[in-house]
Amino acid sequence: MEREILYLKVPAFPVAVERLRDPSLRGRPVAVCAAGPGRTLLQAVSPEARHEGLFRGMPRHEALRLCPGLRVVLPEPAAYERAAADLFVFLTDYSPLVEPARPGSLFLDLSGTRRLFGPARDLAWRIRREIRARLGLEARLGMAANKLMSRIAVRVLPENGLCDVFPGGEKHFLEPLEVSVLPAARGPEQAERLAELNLERVAHLLPIPLPALRLAFGRLGLPLFRQARGLDTSPVRLPSRAPRLTEEETLPEETNEDALLLAAVQGLAEAAGARLRGMKAAAGRMEMEIQYADAVLAHRSRRLDPPADLDLSLFQAARQLLEQTAGRRVRIRRVAIHCTEIAPLSRQIELFPEELLFSREALLTGETLFPRVALLGEKTLFPRETSLPGGTRPPGPAREEALQQAVDAIRGRFGEEIIRRGRKKTGSGYYGQGYTGSAPL
Image 1 (cartoon, helix red, strand yellow):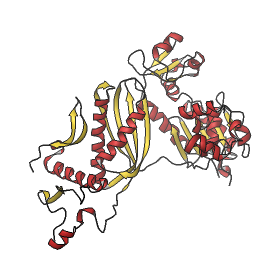
Image 2 (cartoon, rainbow, N blue to C red; image 1 turned 120 degrees about the horizontal axis):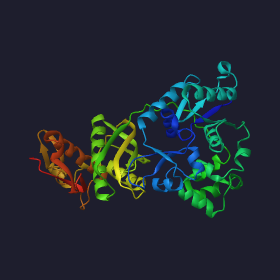
Image 3 (cartoon, rainbow, N blue to C red; image 1 turned 30 degrees about the vertical axis):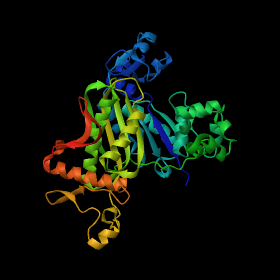
Image 4 (cartoon, rainbow, N blue to C red; image 1 turned 45 degrees about the vertical axis):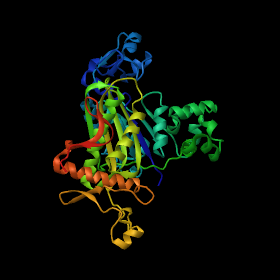
């Protein structure tokens, strides 16, 4: 059966919602921007504001200088979430497969709905009319045989309406477009490399063989090769209901000092690790979210391989994400980490672990290489003698896990604050390595 994917987007969704709340904003330049200093950035701008040269991410003081008649409204995230939820519920009347891409943007899989609603393209126009009548929102729609092409169709649409890409015509549709319409070509590094190679249009990519693209763009070579031909097999998925663990902290004072930010991230990683170990699970992916003082959000995620539940592993991943995410010279107000792809933890039991190795002398005396351990109540914490013959230590992961078990046992008996990773005190937290504390062993 031929796939029929509809992508629906409400341009400048926050502005559209604000105009529903305040009809006096219609027909004039409007921008959504948080309160703050003059360099606060615009979060959304209306079409009228774009005609004046304004754009999302422009400093507010510069926008007011270019457009003195600009109406600036404060963001209301709760109102935007309610409007996005209403839009989602409305679209589920036409297809059971609705996937939100971002607030005000959704994919619908209309494959197989012809008997109920008629041709998919006629249904798309009907959906657009009813959204305008019932929700008061103007939408742009793209219809194609896959998600990639339907999204690109909306991206190149000059105004509200419907852009239809017929099956089999993807290559011809893409050829004259700028290469930046391809998702794999939008990163700054990819854009710079494409400019160096003088690849401006999608048509310039088509004659290049896959091995050459891989040589020039690494792991992005294959996505570029497929996207330039309009190939995409990803399905429309319902909103994920997978377990998601979140730890966040609003800083006492907005800051961009590395020590304070790393201290906050350290605490979040430890809290997430404790919850994961309590669930006897590990996270396969971590997402970093930061909110700047001007209310702009930034996200970055990475896969954890292998899945992690130990404090140190989680902190190392969170620290790298923080360095990648915090790219602006603006103070940060809030930091959050989200652990996803959570799965039960199953560790392979070793037949001959390093802790039970016997030396030649030990075989004769019956003593192991680790005869003395520190005890806390009835629980064994960690070996005091961790040297193997030749002065080597047990493997890193096993040693880290043993140390984590010891720390958890101490905290479980004497409290969370009795032992902390040895860090320099920096106002709102700590930063550093090693453990310190005063637990009465």
